[in-house]
Length: 417
Image 1 (cartoon, rainbow, N blue to C red):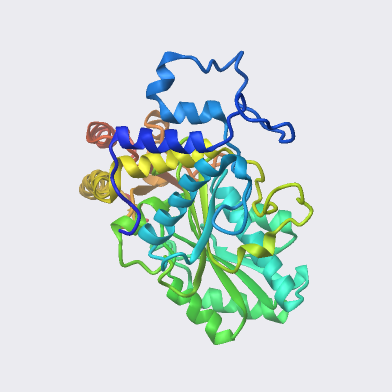
Image 2: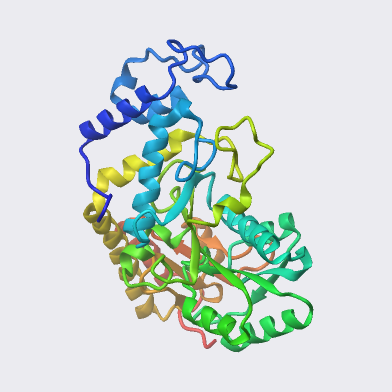
């Protein structure tokens, strides 16, 4: 690991204190021109005694604004201290977790995975327009049918066509011939450029796309494309559970990756991450943001530096080996549950390196699914699937109670499908 180290709570406190001290002090420094301040002191009392032992809460009170992207060009100097911690996060995630070469990636802590996915689509749409003089109607988004709904949002916002590739019902893998047919048909209808979303664990199934298949198909058609990996769920587990995966920056077909720290990393909500190879982010410079030092280059604009510090703290608390142990614990629990389901003849899908189990709804009593908080694939009509996500709070005792409830449910355990 180049950057990812385990730090004690005292060392983290020292680093965060130094970073906050390097930011602007609204009481001691003249700062008449920036539309920013600490949190309202009548509501958020800065003198509370517990703050001295809570560096993250101190960060929220001091309210650093991390507008822009701090891995390239200039940034607002008022918050340079905490921006440095965000740059450290980007280096850890791009180089240590996703195996990028040294100083080869840009990135920022976004407002969530949806924002990061839209950022990618926006960037590649502009790239094709800037470098190929493409029109909107010549660019399409393409993804598996299991892809997250944020791709639908991106297509709607950016006026792009969205092509969904059917998947195999059992393996959840993209159907190769269907992909070929979609690309061929799209070309016949005037599509010349493709923005590809590959899944590093889909939200409903935890299924993982095969990037080699995707690259092969686009090479066959010799069509310009850019591949973005949506690792909003799997990005903080799959690279750890499957270190030789093909969806990180070692793969030359991968240009950018979304991560979501508020899922597996258990950071505060509103904490996604966008990572991208250098030389691409400039396609979303907002030149109209002249008053912002370095100009803005992110979809969100102003954003909380405290969320970046939260990610930094989690990474430093565990270190790479502590985090590996955490992931392996969750995978063990997931495997244990699958073994019990096998003995009951319950049909389910589970990627062997992921912590999601998606059960066939025909073999599960609806009231039982509600009792244990399983999530259906649809809330509108009858569900086809229910999923279990083995997060940190889901322990073996709870899974055992669920298995026992299945044993006595009235729906027969074995149904010919």
